[in-house]
Amino acid sequence: MSEGASSGDGSGTPSRVIRVGTRKSQLARIQTDSVAEQLKELFPHIALEIVAMSTLGDKILDTALSKIGEKSLFTKELENALERNEVDLVVHSLKDLPTTLPAGFTTRGAGARENPHDAVVLHPKHVGKTLETLPENSVIGTSSLRRAAQLKKRFSHLAFKDIRGNLNTRLKKLDEKDDFAAIILAAAGLGRMGWGNRISQILGPEDCMYAVGQGALAVEVRSRDVDILEMVSVLHDPETVLRCIAERAFLRHLEGGCSVPVAVHTELKNSQLYLTGAVYSLDGSDSLKETMQTSVAADDKSQSSDAVDERVQRVGITAAKIPGEAQDGAERLGVDLAKLLLSKGAKEILTVARQLNDAT
Ligand code: DPM
Image 1 (cartoon, protein in one colour):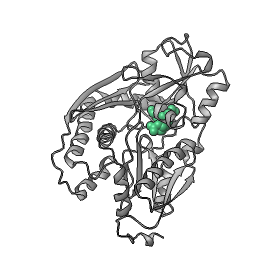
Image 2 (cartoon, helix red, strand yellow):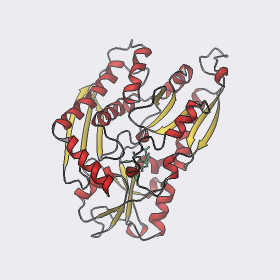
Image 3 (spheres, helix red, strand yellow):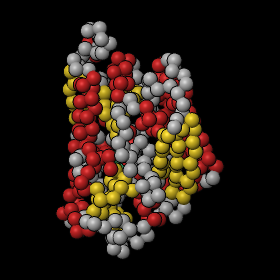
Image 4 (tube, helix red, strand yellow):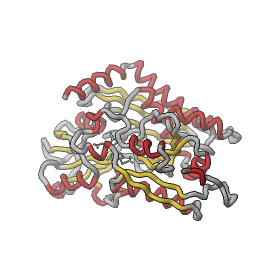
């Protein structure tokens, strides 16, 4: 099927039709279309075809994400399609991509990260309020353990309840019923859907740190598909890649995932990469938070892309054209911060959180 994968025009780009896999949700379609648009602009002569499919995560809409216990909830069916050669690349929210990819797949960062913070969307009757000023016992909808743990501690006058479904469903549940005073969603997803005007508050790190990879997109391809890999590498944003490598290395070393409350905050300033990472008990009463930094100054521009590719299997994201040393530094930063938190008891906090979550 992929026999046509030649570079017939001599430009180094594939001349075949490139099939782009996506989930069927509106958000997934928008994300996929934006990556497809970028590729079209960079490679005007390629033909792209979008193939939409449902994933387990789209089908189980009534169960909290954290309860399903399937790490590749949103990615497995798409990876199967990649494996079977039914699609050639798949666009994901990096946050939904497990930190360990199955053998044979490679991901590449796609574009600059958007606002990584969480946002508050209020029921119309509360417009003008903030989490702080919402009435006592107001119900906040989120099924993210990470969001609930941080916000329960900080806003103890509020109550938290699971809400599931895609973004359209959640906004409908918020607006058309009286069950929730507000819901918490990623600002990036809201922005992509064109609902930025519904954001009444962006939560800074003092209120709620974000999830690993939040706001960034990634493209997953078959590792052996060198020409497609080469093509999508053009989409890289170095700052996004370095921050996300550090965050994902941190999560991976902690053995965290969707089912435990882990949060991060990263910044890149003057070639210094700063990573703050935290773990929480389910009610937020117990927590550990630390910050570390490392230099990611670029000084080995001669890095060969083969050496970079070895890194792919470690945290499931990498980039050609970004110095391998900087990527190594970012990865080490994530691992070192995880080690520091583990030495202070992070494992115990996460184990209790996991057991409690499984039991309720
Ligand atoms: C993951 C979580 C959620 C998604 C858990 C978390 C939110 C689940 C919920 C791992 N994936 O954040 O602590 O609220 O019940 C998801 C969204 C996006 C990617 C939607 C959202 C869009 C933003 C982005 C679901 N995955 O978080 O509001 O690209 O980061």
